[in-house]
Image (cartoon, rainbow, N blue to C red):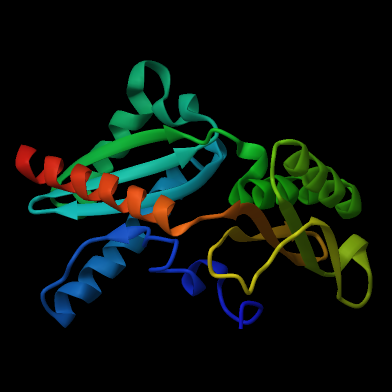
Length: 231
């Protein structure tokens, strides 16, 4: 089962929390907020595409939207004297028609983040660097940075071959069937002159035990209560 479903959705509610945290009272509101979440993520990705965006988390409160942007280059998101982040916040206010709180958070270890690894490989392949070299170097960097296991898979017309093929580089353990295994997963497409190359990255960070999960939930509940009291 672990090899047939999305690693994040498979662990949702067990060791993973949703990247969009809000409640909709009816079906119509749910649809509107879901489309709005997609528009928010697209806006952030388009505005600061070169900042190494790892993830975008959205939390909603009455009359307020909090957007947490995880990035490897917070300086690019903030901009000169905060110009970029202020412009982005203004566009988010116009999009949501609510007061938006934008938080820029730095990824502590970008070498072990699946989204950043996939983006790095895609950029190298688009610059005509050997896909084998890009895959092996990314896996080695992640393992040196402390990852328990890494798996990178690429598929398409690799190196301009006439027929598409699939290649995989793996190091360490990647237990996809273990629910308490903290698996970071990302997909990316590299646009080359031969067509699109699909890239998938799995990174294993170790196991999350029940007591660790309980502590994180208590911290999040306390933060939500504090935010609600402030609003």
